[in-house]
Amino acid sequence: MSIKAILTDIEGTTTSLSFVKDVLFPYADQQMEVFVVKHRQDPQVAKLIDDVRLETGNAVLSLAEAIAQLRQWIADDKKITPLKAIQGLMWEEGYRNGDFTGHVYEDAVRHLLHWHELGLKLYVYSSGSVYAQKLLFGYSDAGDLTPLFSGYFDTAVGHKREAKSYQTIVEALDLSASEILFLSDIAEELDAAAQVGLKTCCLVRENQPTATLQHPWVKNFDELDVMSIT
Ligand SMILES: CSCCC(=O)C(=O)COP(=O)(O)O
Ligand SMILES: [Mg+2]
Image (cartoon, rainbow, N blue to C red; front, top):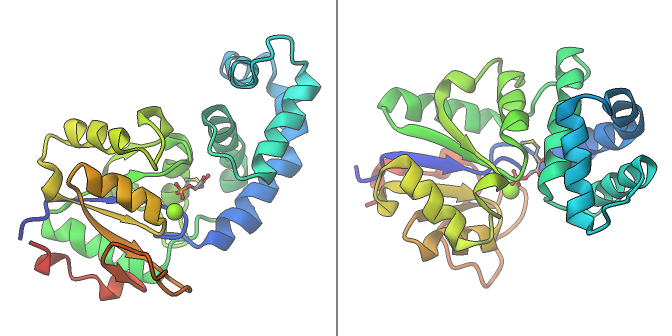
């Protein structure tokens, strides 16, 4: 077997789009004002609001304007680092209160467990913050899955459609790129990973592969034979 590590995306790959779009994002949107106002003096939140000001290029953005900007970014599904960090902090309350659990497809749970037993190293790369990733897998429908993972990456290494982000991950894992299999539902992310030599597979889940897809694809993890990838 040549694959030594699996790097997986979350939304659309291990986890349904609808959990993210219909549960997590609306929760963050509805709680944003109360959360930011309540925690505005916390150094971590204050720094993230400053990061929103930096991102918008408006150093005098008021707190109310920053909140409105964050909510607009949620509506537009922007993968902007300070938004993703604040969302993670907010979702913690939801998970801890039992308002929701992290959706992970049943086939993904089974295969993550199996691959871990086989000795493959498992890593996550998502636009959601590392903190949010750990919460989703820690409070998953199937219980705490975090012991399965050896590491997590977010937009701190760069955006998921940029090849250099995958180069940074390869260097961090101390493996050759061809020993890493990247799983995602987004062709542009797979293209970027393939550019630096990672093996790729597209999860199409409920959809059909697009005619232009340049990668092997499967409907779910049951159809993925990691052992046969050379
Ligand atoms: C990991 S928390 C929820 C996911 C999220 O916020 C997000 O933006 C999903 O991005 P992905 O890169 O996993 O498609
Ligand atoms: Mg995805």
